[in-house]
Every structure is written in structure tokens, then in C-alpha cells.
Amino acid sequence: MSTKTDSRASETDIGFMKRALALAERGRGYVSPNPMVGAVIVKNGKVVGQGYHQKFGEAHAEVNAIKNAGDNSIGATLYVNLEPCSHKGKTGPCTVSIFEAGISRVVVGMKDPNPRVSGSGISYLRSKGITVTEDVLKDKSIELNEGFIKYITTGIPLITLKVAQTLDGRIATSTGHSKWITSEEARVSAHKIRAANDAILVGIGTVLMDDPRLTVHLIKGVSPKRVILDSKLRVPLDAGILSEDLPGRTIIITTEVASKEKISRIEEKGGQVILLEPDARGWVPQEKLWNKLGEIGITTVVVEGGCTVFTECIKNGFADKFYYFIAPKILGSGIDAVGDLNIRNINAAINLTDINIKRLQTDFIISGKFENLKLNK
Image (cartoon, rainbow, N blue to C red):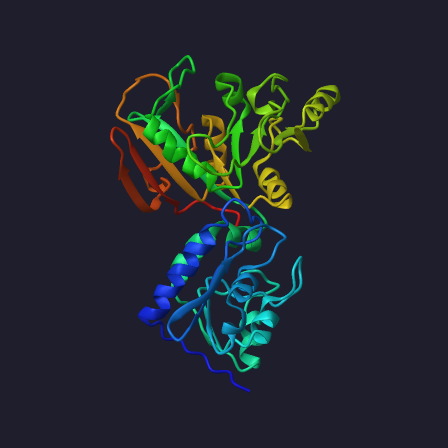
């Protein structure tokens, strides 16, 4: 029985793993809450089969690649960005399929953080005499499935704040007018972020002021679920987010003070209303909010406002990443992007890491991660 592990990552291994990662990306928007996985089968230096996880509940990437390769799988090498599963869920264990296909070597991007797998898949393969190479393009594999990783290890989604503001930090004028602060080019980029997430979340203030539909329509992509924070259930029944022609259901998170009659009216229009116990202010509590979204299988959320929601996410430690779209405009007085965080000492300022700055034709996008928030992870 072989337990050999080949930890060397050759240029060949890296090249085929890049291909597996590119295949995995095709599942974005379709496989959640499962991870995105791609698989490539190589024999004598040539690709003989490939596949990816295409839809939640359907065959995994490894099985699709093996089916594509047929008998060419015998003695071949399988490249997969995530450790093959060793348990039975909606589909059978991929490790068994790999062994039965006669694959002799498996190259893995990263171990599966799911406690039900977490090394057991690799152990099974080794126990069957299959050589395993681990951690090839591990950082890229982690980056691809960062939402799944946080969700499966904490039970709450990866939370990204997307802010469109002026150079002096305003997201709207003092009257609430905000269309449009940034350019159409910037809005196209924003729609790419929407399409990359399971859900888009805004507060009721944004709904009342802008009447958004919260869909992906400036690019080709999957529209995420729409989540509205509305503690007193003030959403108008004729609001755009309750239109019957929108894809999927709008989820409204409210509190137990909400009118039962209005809840029924919203549900008649196809909306989903979730009741949570309010905090001392009568608001939807942050911790309960994110736990509830995790419970219903949402792994990634992009928060698009407004100021109160941004502030509460940061203040309570529920923010992982950010995209600041900055227009070269100055409003002076107006609505701040983020409100008071009770920071009174510069040394307590929130630090941002992994900063990337992208210049568009007129606007800038600054993205990165929150470093020293007390995240509930």
C-alpha cells in the first residue's frame, strides 16, 4: 500500500492546475453553496478529459472529467483544485470514482475545509496506492473559493462592501440624490461583482430612495438573490424589488413587529419574509442576520448600502472585503459612505490590506480586505 506524496510542483503541474481553476470558474453562480471545482485528466502529457461542477446537486467535476476521458483515465493524472470528496451527499464520493477509473496520480490545489472531508479524501486515495501531490497553486485555489471556505468553517457568508462615492466620501447629496455618482464603466464593473456573489443586500433606505431592481443586466451573468434589511417592513408593495418579472425571490429580513397582513401581501407577490427578534434599537441584529443567511445557504454577499448598513457591518465586525468606486467629484455636504464607528484615537483606525487600485477612464476602484475587524469567524 503506497502512501507516497509528491510535493513538487512542476511547471507542467502548475499549467494544468491553471486549466482546472479556469474550468472551476465556469460554475460561479450555479453551484453554491457547493464550491467551484474544475478537473483535468492528463495522459502522456495530453489532456484526455476535463469537466467542472456545473450545477448544485449534479455531478462533481471529477466525475464529469472521468466520463469525458473514458478508458483514457487508466494510468492518467487528475488535476483538481479542491480535494476530492470522500463522503456521500447528493452524489457519491468522488474518491471512489477516481480509484475505479484507474487514475494513478492526483494533483490537488488545496484540502477541503469541510469537516466532512478535510484530508480524508487524500488519505483514501493514498490508501489505494494513488500518488497525491498537494497544494499546487494553493493560494489561487483558496482565493477562488474564499466564500465557500468562510461559509463552511463559520456558518456565515463572506461579506463584501461595495461603495460608490465621491472623492470626499459622499454616497449621495444632502437630499439623497445619487444617480449617478460613478460612470457607466464603473457600473459595469459593479455588475461583475454582483454576478460573482450569491446575494446582494441593501437597507430599506436605499429601496425607498432609489427603488432599485438589484439585478445583473449590464453584463451577461447570473443575478444574485436580493436581500433587503427592513426592520419595520416599510417596503412599498409596488417596489421594483418585488416585481414579478425579476429572477428568483426577493428576501426581506424584518423583525417581529412587522404587520402580518403586509407579510401576506408580500408573499402573495412572490417575496420571502424572514422574521428575526430585534435588538434594543428595534433593528435587525447583525449577528442573527448573517447566521440566518448562512442557514439558508448563502455563501457570499455583496452589500451595496446605504450608510447605515455599511456602518453597522463594519462596527459589528461583519465585513471581509471591500470595493470602493471613487468618482473624481466633490459634493461637500451630503450622505457619508460610513458613519460614526466610535473611533476616537487614530491608532484604533481600521487598517485595510491586500490593496489593489484600478483606474478606469474617469473613476478609480480601490479594493482590499479589512485587517483588524473583530470578525465573527
